[in-house]
Each structure stands twice: as C-alpha cells, then as structure tokens.
Image (cartoon, rainbow, N blue to C red; front, side, top):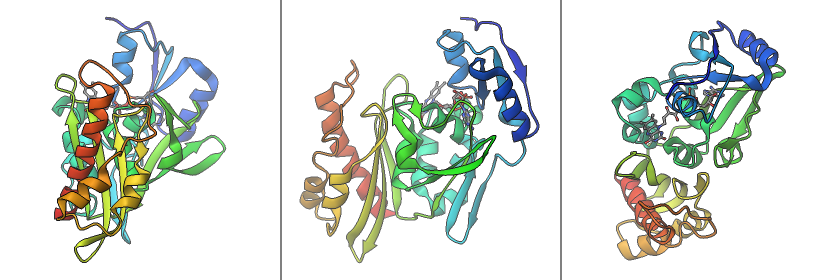
Amino acid sequence: MIPTKFEYAKPSSLDEAFALLAEHGPDAKLLAGGHSLIPMMKLRLAEPEMLIDLAGIPGLTGITVRDGRVSIGAMTKHATLAASEELRQHAPVLFEAANALGDPQVRNRGTIGGALANGDPGCDYAAVMLALDATFTVAGKGGTREEAASSFMVGMFETTLSPEEVLVGVSFAAAPASAYVKYAHPASGYPLVGAAVVLSMNGDAISEARVGVTGVGDHAFRAGSVEKALAGVRPSDRTALEGACAGSAAGVDVRSEPAAGAGYRSAMCDVYVSRAVLAATRG
Ligand SMILES: Cc1cc2nc3c(=O)[nH]c(=O)nc-3n(C[C@H](O)[C@H](O)[C@H](O)COP(=O)(O)OP(=O)(O)OC[C@H]3O[C@@H](n4cnc5c(N)ncnc54)[C@H](O)[C@@H]3O)c2cc1C
C-alpha cells in the first residue's frame, strides 16, 4: 500500500517543531522511528499532510544515570536500550523489554518515545514505565511539564499528549531488582501478556512490589491487588507467590482475540506476573 501525499520537514530545534505543529494543526504528525506511523500511513489509517521528523533535534537521545536516577531521551532507539550495560545493571526490567521487543529492524529504527506516545495496548515499555513509576517529560510551546506514567496512558492508542506536544524523555529511580517477562503473540511478537516487576526486598521476603501489565487490557495497568498481596511473601514459597499473583487482571476489561481469549489471557496474566516476580528476585 502507498500512503497519501505528504510534505516532510526536519526541524533542528523543538521551537521549530512547535512552530510547524502550530502552522499545520491536525494535518501534521511527528515522526520518530516511523515503525508504527508509516505502516498506519500505508494502510491509510493515518493521512497526515505534513510529517515533522524529530531526528534533527539535538538532545533527544541517550541514557544518563546520575545520583541513582536514570534518564532516557525520547528518540533513543530500542537497539540502544537493548545493548546498554548501564540499563542491564540499573533497570534490567527495561533492558529485558527492549531485547524482547520486535525484531532487529524494528529495534534499529523504533524509539522509546514513539512507542510510548503511540499508546499501543501491546506496548512493552508501557508496563515497564508503570512498574518503574517513571516520570515523562513533555514539552510544548508554553513550556515543559512532567507527568507520571500512571496518568499518561489513558486508553487504546490514547495518552494525555496533546497534538502540539512532544514527549522529550522519561526518567525513573534505578531499580536493580526488576524484571520483564513476555508471552509474545506467535506471529506479531507483540505481548499477549507482558509483566514488569520492580521489587524491594527485606532479606528473602518482598517488602514492596510494583507490577505493570501490558497486552491484556485496552492500555497498560498496575496490578494493585497483587502488589498488596506480595508484601511479606517469600518468592521461594511457590504457593504463597502464586496465591498473591492470582487475579492479577481483576477489574480489567480483558481483550479477546483468536490467539488468546479473555479467560486464557487472564490465566496467563497470573502466570507471567509470578514469573516476573521470580525473575526480579534472581537479579
Ligand atoms: C513488525 C513490528 C513489530 C513490532 N513489535 C513490537 C513489540 O513486540 N512490542 C512493542 O512494544 N512494539 C512493537 N512494535 C512497535 C515499535 O515499538 C515501534 O517502534 C513503536 O511503536 C513506535 O515507535 P517509533 O519511534 O517507530 O514511532 P513512530 O512510528 O514514528 O510514531 C508513532 C506515533 O507516536 C508519535 N510520536 C513519535 N514520537 C513522539 C514524541 N517524541 N512525542 C510525541 N509524539 C511522538 C507519532 O506522531 C506517531 O503518532 C513493532 C513494530 C513493528 C513494525
């Protein structure tokens, strides 16, 4: 399929990008890695008249670890995250998600900012950002605002980003006891269930857990009841662990499709959450 005709601009600053967004209004779309947007354009599900490429704007890429906090520019590619020794050490949950995402071609073009801004219900990073309790930095013509991952994702392909805003980066506290495990769709590779877990331990018992889940509902969610139930659990006690992880998708309108009906997906959600907890304790 061939997209409809469009213009292309490559601004060299955020201000230039904001001016282009203001000039073209709803006819403009930001372009990052193009690995969600271009397929949508080819299918004519998106028909922007102006593409504003973020690749020429300095300062939007890279991973920084300072004072126990990790910051990542929105235009940082999946492949960079997947190869980062710093992430492997300070946030294995994100390192593992980047390695589990797509294929080498997707990882070499797609960006973390594009993936999060797109709001796909199967975005691997969405669960990870929730478990990391990440903060998103969003820039607009009027200045910069910060938003918690928990309020950023609001529905299927829906975030709180306005069309005039640019997601410039994400940041979070280092989380060495963390893990991401994914039950991938056999054809697309997107998660049927993706579970991200960040733990604090008191000896061999969990003192605090944050659990993010993607692929299951219309957007990623925190499994709050599981988080509460995990407090005090020794992961080596399989019965207690599985008991705490039961009902992880309770209250969620679980998606159903030929590869995974709602009942099966809910059951797999419990299994993958408990596997992620175990993986995080081994870190
Ligand atoms: C074959 C294939 C397999 C894939 N498998 C997976 C998978 O297993 N798991 C997974 O999570 N993803 C998967 N993806 C999606 C992949 O992660 C994409 O890279 C990602 O969804 C979009 O990132 P991008 O940089 O390509 O953004 P684009 O496609 O360029 O943009 C996506 C959307 O976000 C907007 N946007 C982009 N950047 C910004 C920004 N900084 N600020 C504001 N808005 C912005 C664009 O306007 C557009 O609407 C797959 C994609 C393909 C093609």
